[in-house]
Amino acid sequence: MLLVNSYFILVSLLVVAFYGITAVYFPQLYILCTYEDMYGEWGQAFFFLVTFIFSALNVVNRDTGRFRWFFGLLALAALYTFMEEISWGQRLIGFDTPEFFAEYNYQNEANLHNLLTGPVNSGTKTFLTYVVALGMLGYGVLFPFLLRRRWSLALWFDKWGCAAPPLGLMPAFLFAAIFEAEFFAFNEAEVAELLVAMAMAFTALLFFLNKYALDSLTRVFIFIFITFTVAISAFSTTRILLNNPAQESGIAHRLANGYKRFSDRYERYDHYSAVIEVLQLYDQ
Image (cartoon, rainbow, N blue to C red):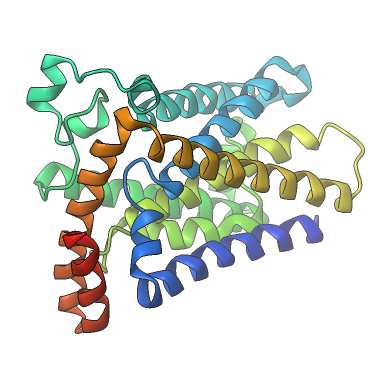
């Protein structure tokens, strides 16, 4: 288990380091990995799909025992989130936004979550942001730590079937909570979503693998395979959409909007070389 947890810590820190470095030194790449229909968002979507698949497998396997209800709820939540991330197929098929969503959705898309939150500041969005951030800390950091220390409350949750994530995923949840709160106001909530999607996928997969007599090295190779499969799927889907004439103009419009917004964000940090770069991209 030490080797598996080491991989979880490594991949979590690599994700954080990648986004940190690109935010400072490669503004275009950072925007491409955090904006709608781009690489990072498709990474989120596919990790949620992985979460659904292995959660569903845990539900149908009786060996999951008292944790079956937890993975049943997680499977439903992951499937719903995956469908919301792809706007119930709109991002792939490109159908017109229904009238109701066109009027009330913050991003003019066929999904429910942007009826409440979106690229605007609101009291509802702020409240939900901090609730979600605290939930990440509570479930992903405090729960596994207290369970390891055998605290009574954590043991009670475990007894009633709340599956704790492995300790190696604590950095993923910790950074996700920080990024979800958006202290930097740099669209880092998208990084938080990627980290949480990855962490929940790994949690569901680990519970699935625990039913088999596999050595640690084999388990690590399976997690590496899943990680690269999601990364390749996200990259391929993004490239397909960018080369689709029906989607290209909409994506270009959103990216132009992103470049303009990020010029103001970089200016707040006096990072003027990045301001120049993103404004040039906006002009293009």
